[in-house]
Image 1 (cartoon, rainbow, N blue to C red):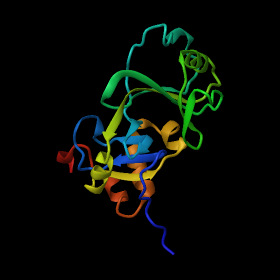
Image 2: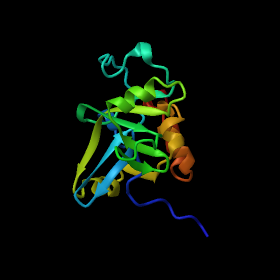
Image 3: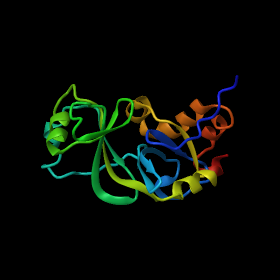
Image 4: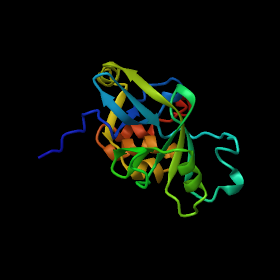
Length: 189
């Protein structure tokens, strides 16, 4: 019996931009769906690295001991807002489990503790988020703008951000695998 393709958008789903999406932050993006209801959806882009200088009261670079801290452009909505995406289940009252082993949330004290712990959990500081109104994400999916795949802690934290998009397409196989080889600059084709 052939395995059916993953076809349900839900919390813990990756949205993988189709090659037809060629604008802004969503170009070759992978979005982790953090909430999906009849009223709308929100998620975090996980594969767009950021280089920022943050105020010392948020992160003192001299105290940064955790080698697993990343900064991501989480989406175009409220880019000055920082959200913490991590693997720590130590503060269940402050976090929402998005998929197995992946948590969203935490306060400044939690952030300070994990970034100064050389054995701390992987954590991504996501600036901004992606949001959709009621029915909007479903329409984009049906229009072919997104492919969907179950999210995994491995892809979020242990694969280089620039390799997540193509890696997921290869992992999906079938008609998706050849899409992973489309060059970013079509003039080199």
